[in-house]
Structures are given as C-alpha cells and as structure tokens.
Length: 182
Image (cartoon, rainbow, N blue to C red; front, side, top):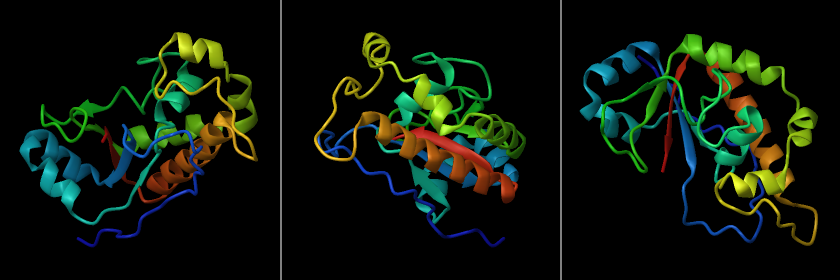
C-alpha cells in the first residue's frame, strides 16, 4: 500500500506569549483497515505513528477551537466534538497525554460536513474570553491581546481554517484519522 507522505500544515502564527513546550493536538491520516488493526492491537500505535504519515497539528489552539465548536470544555455533540471526544480510543497506550482516538472515514466525512457549515465569522461570534477562562480552556490566554496584527482570536481562526483544510483532505482521500494530544 502506498501512503501519502506529505505533511499538511496551515501557517498558524503563534502569539509570542505562548511557549513552545505544551500540549498540542495532532491529527494523522489513518486508513480504516489500519484503524481496525490498531483497535485490535493497540500496542502497534507507536510503530504506526513513527511511520511517515500525512499529519498536522493545531498547536495549542485545539481546546479553544473545541470550545467554539461545542460550547463545552470536554464534551459536546458529534461530530463537532471530535477534537476531544468521539471515535474509539486506541487501547490504553499513552501517546503523549493519554491514548489516541480513531475516527473512521465515515466519521471524518460527517465531521467535514459539519465543519463546512460553520464559517470563521460564525466561530468568531462564539468567542467569549471570560467564559473560556471560567471554563479553564487551555492554554488560559483568551483575554490577552498583543501588539501588532495577531491576537488570540486570530490565532484560533487560523488554526480552525487549518483544521477545515486538513479534514477536507482526509475526506477526499477517504481516510480516517487518529487524534491525540502530545
């Protein structure tokens, strides 16, 4: 089987007050047959992730995006909750900050369809720094703005555009995804 070996990355400009050492969300293309195999033999997850695969990361924007999509710190309705919930956990094998979750190609297609119905402008209207801080949305920067062009909302919106592009690419390839925090 030939797997894609390019890395899709959307240029997310990190606000300077975010350190590089932290939790980031990583998404990796995973064909359904390999997902089934990993669910049966989760100890193979490290070998799977060590291979060159189509992947992206959302930097530290993952929790803020999840909040804007679901209004929840850790749950929400499928498929909009897929950054933090849904899919099937790949055993109990820690790949950074706990186990990875697997989303089938059908779940990815539903996620894509849901994401295409939410524009950046609609997402921006949901941005509520106080509520995000009260809900302890990582990395607790939402009330800060910085000098210059970028602020925390722009950071989230850039990452959201990258998420939309990546999930669209996965759908085009009929691929599932592994999602995990590292």
